[in-house]
Image (cartoon, rainbow, N blue to C red; front, top):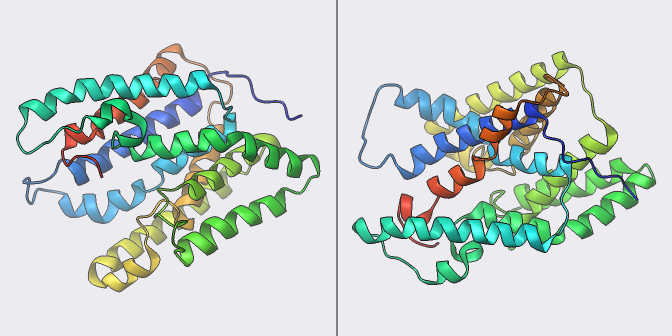
Length: 287
């Protein structure tokens, strides 16, 4: 059986969690809270330069989960349920005091599936299938056949899902196939102890970043380019590999470092997400 990493809080990874959540907050600010703001200084910079670089934050979170591994535990599911329920109760206030926001009572009974948090829904689904994924990973790892498993994961996520957009599989990366692929990548890094040269990581990351910026700029002038490449999707290979490279870079940075303050701040990232992406806070109701 594969030995699972101890739940040791490595602060370099916790800093990465905080950074990824900050990137998510920026994205939510533009997409959920910018209505009525109009033009403002640096708006073009925000949309043409900063925004395209953000599309790897969710992938980073799932890579971290894969690195440390998931176990199907009823206590973990129940903890997520009660946490989501608590923030649904808190958010009810906004539904009653703000105009044009209707409250859906089923979100109180089913806060995970009806609460409007897409990430929580897919993440719980990932936890539910984690025993199966772990068995598959253990099978390939014990036979030193990681290449075959990575190829299979990439075929599903990039060729079938991203490239061909097959119905019931493709959902712009907001789906279990993308999360499963990222989980496998995270386990690969942990079990194979991937340790690339820092110069190689930074060079590759810069190349991918400039590519994303170029596609983003061209996409505003020629929408057909954005439609074809879909740079703002989580399952885009460029975004997946960008997240992978950033993750490898933070693994090398201050390895073995543990800071209680950083770790405590990191534990608040889930609460921040549940508040800022709550359907009653940002408005709009359940989708």
